[in-house]
Length: 554
Image 1 (cartoon, rainbow, N blue to C red):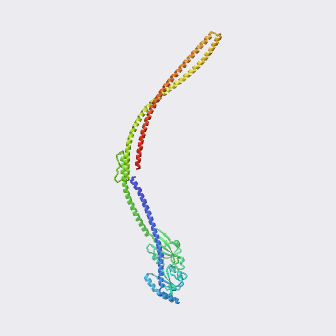
Image 2: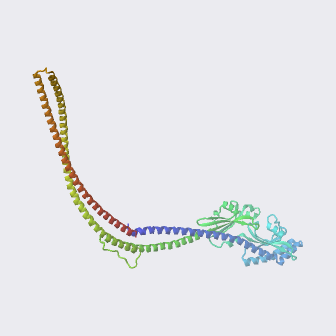
Image 3: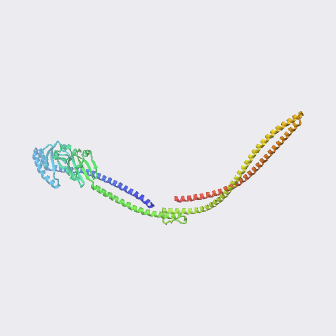
């Protein structure tokens, strides 16, 4: 694989890894941001629902306060105080009918409902149907409280028909004494309609079954039951089957959020005017639009990253191509120098960089190498001369070694002959010893004979024949002794001759040994001269290695 690909492939893989990592990290961060935005949107929407409940209830309170301040209302309550409750009801109903019509016409409210009360909790007049006179104390805590405390109230209170937003205001007579109360009723559907501002939003309002003892009329409508709750109202696009009964029950203690792939579902508790949880509002937002926006953002994010990677790769390829081209030109120059031509040098442009520093260092190394090689050439000539001298010495030593080997063989022959002479000397010595023993025996015999002669001569009783025989025997013994002495003298002469020959041989061996020592000394001197030349050659080689290492580090 070429250097260009070795440089490009790892960087390409690294850029791909970085690009993929950046893409996924950015996508994950984008998803997290979108989830945070969705959560903020949900929380904002739930806050809007609560604020819409408060605003609508406050509008109902304003309407009630305006109605309570009308002179005709005060006159009707005065009539009740005079004892004509029924006449007062008819009088007030006739007056409020025209007001109801005008309000519905101007505001667009389909059913403008106002309810007047008598203390402590008795219905005076319902303007939408003209009824009244029934006791409200069993389920209308707001009426009991306002007629007891004389302070206005607003918020949700469940009535016979279910959830209702109410605004209650006290009614005072001309003297400023509270004589009753009036409330304006707004349906819960207004809160849902006002809170739904986007097509992807859906709402559902559910009431806990424990409130059915109050909402009796609502129970007769057979509402849809979901666990312990009843569906009071929902927008058209709300998939009621997505509502989980367990989540409804759990959300009575607080908000619950459930993010899904294509939608987000939130359960929000509904509290009445006193803060008691009486139901649950379910908010569903479709995330398909958000998902499409998220996918669009991801592609918009990935596109620039991919384009940036491509541009970076092209720029890196061009830079790598230029650098590899420079390296190839340097390699070609080095190849020419490696071929043995130390006169060539690498070209160095005017605008130099790190690669040119390498070329400059290489040229310096070649200059130093050329100088060292010239010195090595001289040392090589010296070594060659020393080697030739060693070869000559080797020839001489070979010839001398042959002569020494021949002299050694001659010496071995001489030693062998001396050994044989010594063996003969031992034999002669043994013969002389034997002769000496014989002479001793003969001397003993002669002594005995001489004793006999003396004995015989002293006695002068022997005969001449016996003396003559003894004399002959003694003469024979003397002759035998002389012969043995001559043999001993010959043996001694042979020993002297062998010792002289041995001395001559040892002298020749000593001379040959001296000559070999002289030649060995000369060979040692030539060997030392060759060793010095070899050491000089090794020193020159080390200098070459040092210069090469220095250039390599550069």
